Length: 343
Length: 271
Image 1 (cartoon, rainbow over the protein chains, first blue to last red):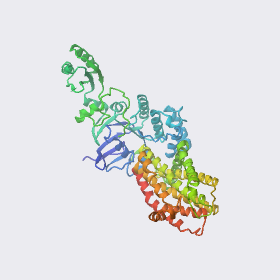
Image 2 (cartoon, one colour):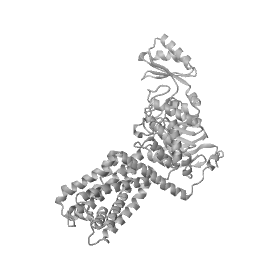
Image 3 (cartoon, helix red, strand yellow):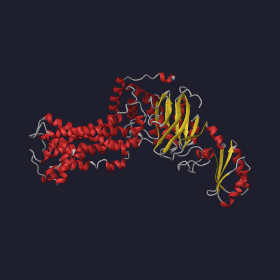
Image 4 (spheres, chains in turn brown, green):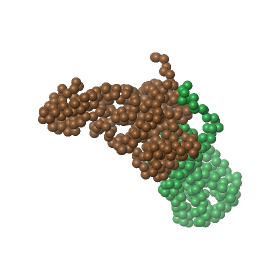
């Protein structure tokens, strides 16, 4: 092997990480680095090993092999120092529903060993910037899902962590809550916080992350910037459903010459997907024209960005193995966070 | 190593101890606040034990013959206080199971707080909750004819023994809650094992009225020993203060703690 990489230049350095639970190999040799002040998106379906990775990196779970170093501290040997440098937030919140937003902040702040004065000042700032001032003295059980996550994130930030772990921060949120969370994550990134974010949605990683690693069955199967990943899929996709089954062949013929790539046809659902690279709008107009000329009636003709499914398909040759991720109902851009299940 | 790393200085042992204490107190306060905000919890801790006192005092009491001074109500009160302390730990199991399942414990463990504080704060809050319940029961007991026969110091001793018993059972319940980690299952199993232990004991009836095979169990199990010791403290009697069951009871409690406190801590680490 090559000489060991210096650990201190990265906020997160991970090397050969393995973790098994009995016969289940949750992590099977993971390596990656996160430079200071950048956002890493860890993308993968349910059960891919994302949460296990986060639990190892946040000192909650010892790895079976390999090592992870956060801000120069080993997660096993210097666990206490790691915990002072990091914060964890996400799907599960540390919020006590019976207590008010302010009381929750106070408790987490005290547990981070801040003085009462510090908790008060920073808490007020965070409530303000997370749009929770009005709700601050109401019990958290009256909050919306998005508000609970924001409160939880605010509590995590009381200690001014230099590395923030966000485990599926938008899973289960409605579109509004999701956008609000994205906004906050962007602001934190702009302030220079190093962020590791896990998600099942490519568009989320796309929106927020500088670099993305795609993880499946405990292994990294692809990594790069979101543009690099999408290039592997072949850029944007044109997608439509043929109304009449008998016309599917005609439809394929009509759009076949549009781009270099072959259309992907699902006979069962009469669905046709075509890679259109970065010539999306041109291809869209042309496709409408040709399909119309061929007399093919279509439904839901749309241009969309590649989804996690497409990346998986391109990288592994098979669809991601999870029912939430395989749902065909997803369209480009934002979708309702429909998957409340954990990883 | 890293420039960022240098900024952190290692906290001293003294500092760590101070944090462990303050973290436990913060967790205690947190748990007590939740308890005070949920009416159902108040009912469980206060109303239910009072109903037990009234039921046993007036429904069963007339049919149960006892030899001690003051009659059945004096016999009953130490028993019902012990039983209530044990049953109160059901809430410990439920709360910990919920927090483990919802990921709250994970989140707390990722904080730079003392790792002992989650369990310590839970036990302290539950001990305080138990003390409130015991005080209410003694109040109701006095209203229905119960009287301590043995002076204030022994009465306080009885309350302390009940607390020690309750905290010990708390460790078992904490282990159950953290090991099962599922609220519904804990609802089903969290209390059920306490029924034979508390009812097949000297808590409510004299053991001599039970069938012989049952007496063998009832006479030698820890709940009987604890309640006999509590009764001796409350009512006095020929063997007071060197009642043999007090020492046996304390030995049992220490033994149970030695087994279940580490088990609870281990289950907590895995939660």
